[in-house]
Structure formats: structure tokens, C-alpha cells
Amino acid sequence: MRRLFASALSCSASLAALACGDVVKSAMPDAAATPDAPAMRRCDPTKRFGDEAPLGGLGDFELQQSVTFTASELTAYVALAHLPAPGASPDFDIYKATRGSDVAEFSTLIREVGVSTTDTEPDVSISEDGKLMVIARAQAGRDADLYEIDANPDGSFSTVTRADALSTTGLDEGRPSVWGGAQTLYFARYVDDVKLNDLFYAVRSGGEYAAAVEVPGVNSNAYENGAVASASGLELLFNRDDVMYSGVRASTSDPFAVAKLLDDSNTQIAGSIHWLSLDGCRLYYSRATYDNDQLVSSRLFTRSRPR
Image (cartoon, rainbow, N blue to C red; front, side):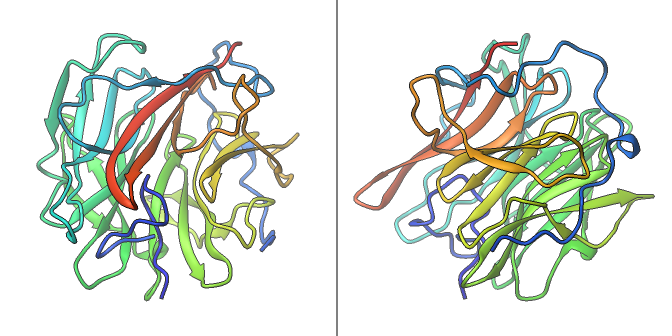
């Protein structure tokens, strides 16, 4: 069975416990039902992103897997690992990173001991207020599933709960992305060997998720894996195979119209999308490097676009 690839790495690489059709089943939740971000001057989604810059201050980890921020972009949660021995799988853990400004390198990096385990946690997403974390976790001999962690009063995380409503026996779920005040969760799910991975979303109410449905206008017979939505819900940045795409629409009841995401050199942007700032200005993503099909590194980057 082809496994969900819930990571920043290319489908040509695999993890031991986690690897790697145009269908519209439901409209997205109406924007009026999902709180938007505070009023701010936002960047124009029709503008292209500029040059990439690496995220600094993440220590000596060769594998920088995913990154997510609270609203200020001063606090991030990152999935990091060292390169494993040949034939072994990376053991990703979740770290909290802080910095003084949204353009500075990270100055502190602390392992989240209440979340990280001897299993691998390759994906992480945090709500804007920092009160809800969602991770992907792969246990030996089991599917990759999504887990929720509510923040403790001191801001730490400790009680990890499997999102049973989103977990499908025999299938992998990963690449979570919390959106809209933690009322909606985007994620990727392995479908079958024809459609491969598709993107889904689920609405959360009272701490429980409704049944997940496909993101309208996005899925195909290719490999959709990972998506982040703008604060308004009118723009969706997502991965199809190894290329980034943008979907835009006039209202949240419409399907997305999809186009490849290009940089200012008219080149397709390659990498795995992880987070979009609330003003739509800064995109964060990762990209892996290989040597003769052997994974060498995976690094996190950011790009900005004009307002």
C-alpha cells in the first residue's frame, strides 16, 4: 500500500512508518461562521513571492521538517531531526522556537517534552492564539494519525489526544493546518493508489470534529499533500506533487480556481508549504536535498510578497 507522505521530503524518499481526481463534495464553511484575523493591511494574493531566505537559528539539525507560528510570528513550533543511520527512519520531535522580530533568526530552541516521544512527530500546526496544537504522529506498525494537544495554563503542552473522528483505519493522515481560530483543520489523507493523497478539511465545534470532506476544486489524480489558507479563506496555497499551487475564489461557497505558484523569475516554486502569515505576506516552506537518491538535508525557507 502506498503510504501518505506527511513530510517535506520528496516522494522518492520514504520513512519506515510514514511515507510517502477532481472531486467536489462540499463547499467550505462560510466565512461569516469562521472568525477572521484582526483587521490588518494584507498583501495582494495576485502578487508573486520574492526571493527565498533560509530560516536561521534552528541549531544543527539536518532535517527541518515543518514550521508553524502563532499570530505574532515571534513564536514557532518546528519538527526537527538529525539524519538517521542508513536504512533507518528519522525521529522527528517538536521544538518551540522564539525570536525578537518576524525577520530575525530564532534565538531560543526548546524541545516540547510533553509532545515529543519515541515515535516520530513530523508535522505540527498551532492555532493563532497558541492554545491548540495539532501534530501528525507515526507509531511503528501503525498508520500515521492526527493528534490534538490543548495548551496548559502556563502555555506548555502535555495531554495528547488522538483525533479519532479524522483517523481512518488502514490510511494515513498528516500535514495538519489549523485555520480560522481553530474552527477548521486542513490535512492530507492517503486515498488509494490511483488518487494517491487528497486534501480534506474538517470543522471543529465544542472540541469535536465533524466528518472530513474534500477541499473543493483542488484534488486530482496527482499528489496533493499539504495546504494553508489565507485568513479570509479566499486563497489556498497547497502542494501538488513537488510544486506549489495557489487556489483563489470570490467567496467561501465557491470552489478554488487553481494555478501554479510562481516566483518573480517566472519559475515554479518547489517545496512543501507549511504556513502563511495572517496578512498573507510571508510564506514558509521546506525543501529536501538528495545525493544519488539519498536524503542529505531538509531546510526551512520563507518568501515575501508586496502589499
